[in-house]
Image (cartoon, rainbow, N blue to C red):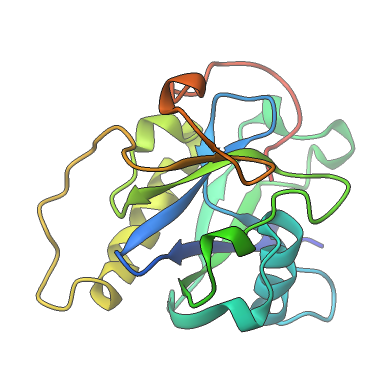
Length: 199
């Protein structure tokens, strides 16, 4: 479903824990990390799509989270031609996204990367709020920065803290929910490769 300008409606999710760290997921069989996100289906509201994607990508239900905030308007990014599926080329320009900031009210063990038969992530971790954008695919970085900046007012009540890009620290979990050593999972920047767009 594309709008008249060629953008696919989409939602993005920034999930906070009690320490204001964010869920940071490693894409299946890739060295790229990202927030959960996905398309809005026909007839869905952005909030309905957010809850569906929350379940499909990280196995959480509405009862596990609380909505803290959302972006006021759509944030857009264009997808380079080499990332666009052939059947969409010509009309498709990219994604327009509403971003939701959620607070986890459940437990870490409620996260399940294998809730569906087509998982998006094979590992995850909690990361401090200002995630390292060099581990995000390049054409999404501006939107990530815009979303983090806009939603930071709900996290840091007394203004934005010094923005530091750091390597992930803390606990790292695999798809089965087991803690693993951070050294076993690469956090290198995204390598260039061809293929369909990363949802």
